[in-house]
Length: 172
Image (cartoon, rainbow, N blue to C red):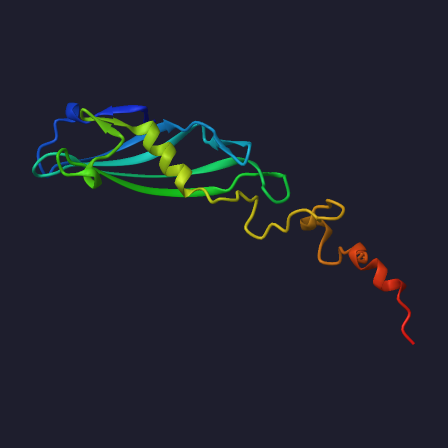
């Protein structure tokens, strides 16, 4: 069983320059709110693989890899969906190396692993969460689920009311 972690003391690992370590941890990810809907990440404690390397000259190179599902309503058909996303994220923290080399998740050699994992997962989630890639959604006229109704589902088109006066016109 992997250890649960929210924060990780990098200095306490006592890595020398060029040395690295791979850890298997479980990290809880807070639910996400997308388009006014709440999406829960499962499993409750996501198993992550974390690689930590101490860089020559100070600082750390970090790599996290995990897979998690996002449980919530499909944005097209509103049925429950649980798409799975694989996350592969890297961070570098080198004090004094400039803005590009300063990780927002490392403060005083303590890694905020929960925040990094949540942000990396949120960036992996698409703008529209779907129950499946080919979800047809709901009919705009009768709100029938087009995934179940099939291609034969259609409605007779109603004439545009803006053209009503032209229908009264009689041409000889």
